Length: 103
Image (cartoon, rainbow, N blue to C red):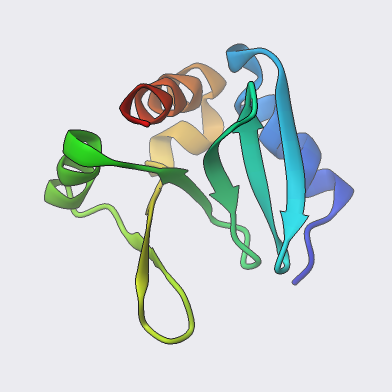
């Protein structure tokens, strides 16, 4: 599945409270940036993942958030955005700020 204009509009609406966003299409998905810092991706299958490091990544792992896996089974430092945040731009942006603070 390729990222559509509707997918991009959804991401901008979802993370709109963050302010200025940018994006780049990559490998069938989308990289999402705030002030030049990547903080999330939209996978080719339409799932939103947050970039995580340090204690924030540990907290997401402890909560059983799903880690982004590439085809060879290797994980990356991206974890699913909580389901409740997918319909709540304020909550989604709060999670995104936590991700950005951890980076």
